[in-house]
Structure formats: C-alpha cells, structure tokens
Length: 79
Figure: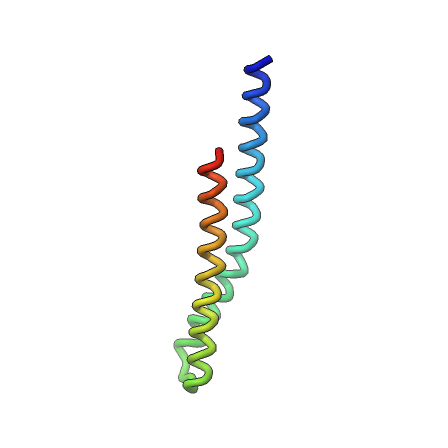
C-alpha cells in the first residue's frame, strides 16, 4: 500500500510539473513576440518619449519572464 501511495504522489507531482511547464510555455511564447517587436522598435529612430516606452516594455517583460522562471523553479524544488 505504501509503495502505491508513493507512486501516486510521484505521478501527481510529475503531472503538476508538466502543467506548469505548459503554462510557462504559453506565457513565454507571446512574451518573446513582445520582446522581439520591442527590439525591432528600438532599432528605429525613436523620440525620447518612445524610447522611454520601449524601456518600460523591456522592464515589464523582464518581470514577467522572471516570474515564469520563479514558478518553474518553485515547482522543481517542491518535487
């Protein structure tokens, strides 16, 4: 009985990890598009105000990427 319980807990943990990996992938895909388009904008001749906006996009996307990485790290530690 004990081995069945352990096997079930390990399977549940693996399923949670897989779900988190999918969620993080789903978050990263549009995030990479945002950062890519922002980099393309930065390669053009921007006004100072537009440059400030692209800086804000860079900071916000960096925060989102850090959060997704933290979620994955936390999931790995909890298993």
